[in-house]
Length: 550
Ligand SMILES: *Cc1c(COP(=O)(O)O)cnc(C)c1O
Image 1 (tube, rainbow, N blue to C red):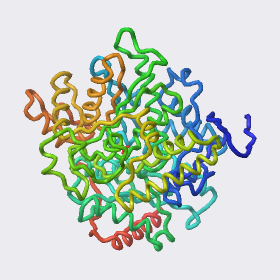
Image 2: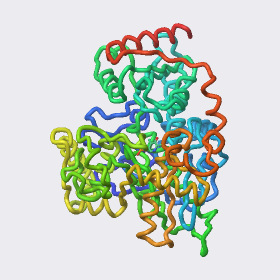
Image 3: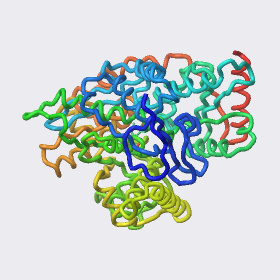
Image 4: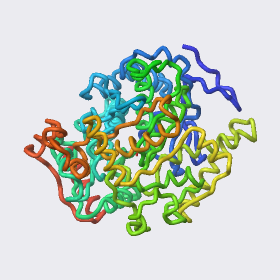
């Protein structure tokens, strides 16, 4: 194997180097291995990890007919050094991760109409797109831990305690990603009685002994506060290695890059237009967005060389990202009231200026998007690179700029407007849309009537945005809109949209057999008060019991 002599200073090369390293977006630290990045999650300066160089997919055209797993192997190999995970091990981790998907194509592409396609990402164990990343992350955790623990017994073994809060989707995907894994316990806190019955059942019917469901008397925010308090607590951090599975973990972004390539190739193979879509032609992706993880993976695909014309960010009424692309200001609360809205009369009345808005697409209900920080780094880096040629200096500059922005976000609730060139470079690769609840409902209705296709509310936010994008580009430009959940997971919104449609019946038209039976299965859950110290003692106690049984 060719080795790259490590030369000092500016290497402007963006090709795959045998030793891929990672740096923090806040600039304090660099040179991290993939393993450190995955196990730590968050950098010690509070930043997020990104690769020091984005690798180029030089021979991406030759990947056209690869299976999802083989394609994943090619892409992930560009980000993970073979010295860290030998290729045959990486292949085994990937194969295992995607063997749990129900569709032979893993993420099938469905033709909706004209040049509009839907990428179904919900064929994993929990029927949500988060499985694509969390099935992989679970196997990766296990791989690193087993390797760390080789030849060790009892107390010497490195044991990871994953703690997370969920309003529904992340929790079940994390549980299915980690169930039965060696040397990992997983604790998922959900607000008691406030997640949908299907999501509650999905989580609590998993009986593996390393899985611990805690139903907290309180709200989702209370659950999140408890998790934050645990991560900040010296006591439990000294005795337990706490691990996170939220969407800031780099491995989750990495796994999601794959389906951008895969769906592009599916489109080449299945193009329904004449002339047909050809390899090398550019496509638009439309992405229902909350924490910016999914669409960020698309940005990496673009930077690697996949012909993406635009990434369209589709938000619901929690529209901080849409407001950024519109104004250049990133602020928790809109300074201009309803200026950025689609003119809905309800907005003024509904605006709870304090917190997040509850919408029909709850997995996208966020105040700030944590992964946006990663894009900010690349924008700041390009801006610096416009002025200077020294690569290392530009990276330092980018880190400092990101730190300053994030500090302002924390202290003043927002920052910006950013420099004109920063905003225009953001607009080169991205557009944004904001979709209201009533538009979401209309879109679900419309596609059911015209196509007999039942969209979940998140995917409907995407499709509503895609239609607006098509309106701008004309029908010549192909659009792939991401479908992030199976409609059965969001029964309330789907029933609201379709209850009056003739012949519509949720049980027979939407509900998969796997869900129909969930209610009758045995459940395990521990009820706990909204008190982080009580939760801490419970976690300690349950880990101890779990390990004793081994
Ligand atoms: C998590 C989630 C999203 C948002 O994805 P991000 O990566 O956070 O932007 C959209 N739809 C569904 C169904 C989700 O679970």
